[in-house]
Image (tube, rainbow, N blue to C red; front, side, top):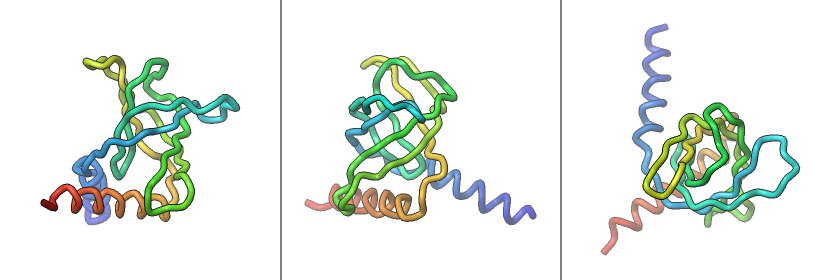
Length: 121
């Protein structure tokens, strides 16, 4: 049992250590029929963040974003973990929930591609 807990904490640690890359995100409250709001933010393996008012800790959201390796937008659900006041206004940090494996793999590949590209001369 301890071995399983270690692997789960390792996975959580890997996500916290995941690089964050700039990303334009479309966001709305989960279940809303309203339009998605566009925000500048960042993407990581386990979630995303953006700057913008109107979000509170615990809010459930729907997020959409495009990855160059996929023909369609990724659609993800998440939970706002933290809201902070920064130099550019309030920002929300979100953890993805129930993200399909295909989407998680596409995000991981995109993050790897961006990191490799950043290391090239």
